Image (cartoon, rainbow, N blue to C red; front, side):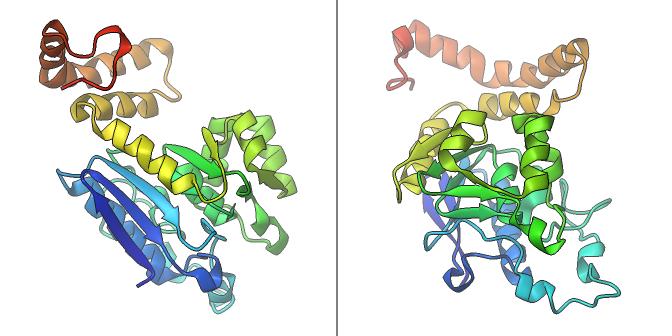
Length: 271
C-alpha cells in the first residue's frame, strides 16, 4: 500500500510511501491521496490533517517514468477529463496530476516535509495551509529541466505566498530553495532538525484541533476567500462568514472564560 492514514484522535496523518521513487506521484497514488483527503474532509470526527512523505522524501514530483509512457499526441489522457468530485475536483477542472492539488478542503492541512519537495512535490507543499520543513529539506522547480510545466497550482500559489518577483525567480531558474531560505522568505513557517518535521507538524495539528472547530474553519475560510477582494468586500465577506461561528462557538467560549478558563493567554486550559 503506497498511501495510508494514521489517526490520533481528530488529527489524521496522510502518508505517501513509495520510497523506491522518492515518493514521485503516479496515478494510483494520486487517486489514493485524493480519496484520503476527501475522506478526512467529510469525517465529522477529523479536524486537522498532516501530509507526510515517508522514507526521507516528501515528493520528487510527477513520476517521469510514467509521463514518458503517455501518448505524445495526447499526453493529458485521462487528466483532461473532469471527475465527479466536489470542491475543485470536478466540474470545470479535472483532478490534478499530483492528486489533491485542486481540492478546496474546509479543514486545515499541514505539510511535514523531509528531503526533496520538488516540481509537483513543491506544488503539493504549497497546497497545504502551511509548511514544517526539516533542516535538510528543500523546494525547487526541478521540472524546469524537462519541459514539464507547473500544472498543480505552483504558478498560482507561489506568488501569493512569497510575492511575484521572488516567485518568478524561483520558477524560472528552477533552483534549489533550502529550508532555511524558505523560512526567511515565508515559504515555510517552521524548520526542525532532520527527522523532526512530522512530529512538529502533528504537535501543531493537535494544538489546532483542541480549539472550537466551527470558529477555526470560519477564520481559515475567510482568510482564503478574502484574497483578491477589495477591503470593503473582504470585510463584508468576513462578517457573514463569521456570524455562525460566533453563534455556535463564541458565546459558549466567552462563558468558559467568565468561569475562569483561559485567563492571561493560558492556552492549556480552555475547556
